[in-house]
Image (cartoon, rainbow, N blue to C red; front, side, top):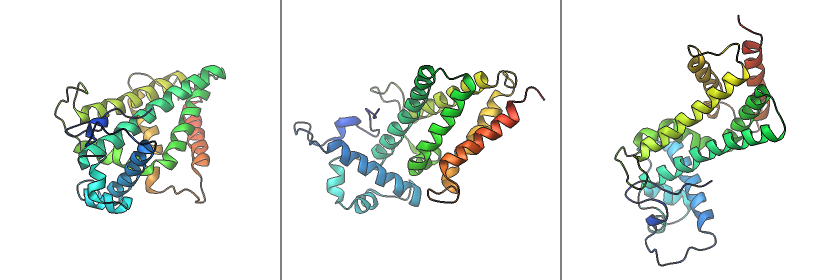
Length: 228
């Protein structure tokens, strides 16, 4: 899925300067390239420091050309986070569908979700950094087309991801999770996987796939042995 809105004063295709001009076949590809490069700039320099000129230079284009796609740095940030959070929710849906098709039990389905998240994190490190660090910079003014503010939309998507993982954990380890410890257990799992961008490097001695198996093993050893 791709985001419909891009934040800031205008969203989605309304940020185009000339709505009458038909989009080229490579329009979305160019937009994806801009978002990838912008996320790298935000991760490297921080969102407040990075400028439209920095992003344009990193893209190998002019600032005027960049404004052809996005009217502001805020609009770029929203599109980065809009698309990325939709991708995370899509991963959850895809794993659930695969689990049903393969008739996996609840624990195996959770394990597949962990593998899928870490597989995505491997190629989305900069976007993940923006999700963790830059959501607070989104506008908190309600946008009538979104039905809420850009910041609240992204925060709600994050809450949906956390809620889905909590449900998966409760189904996988029903003897160990309950209302009093489910939040702590969910945050423990996210604590293990959400900060891999700070230390786990593709091509290093430990792969993302291998680390996923280590996380799964730790969960099973800690939660899969019945009440302590």
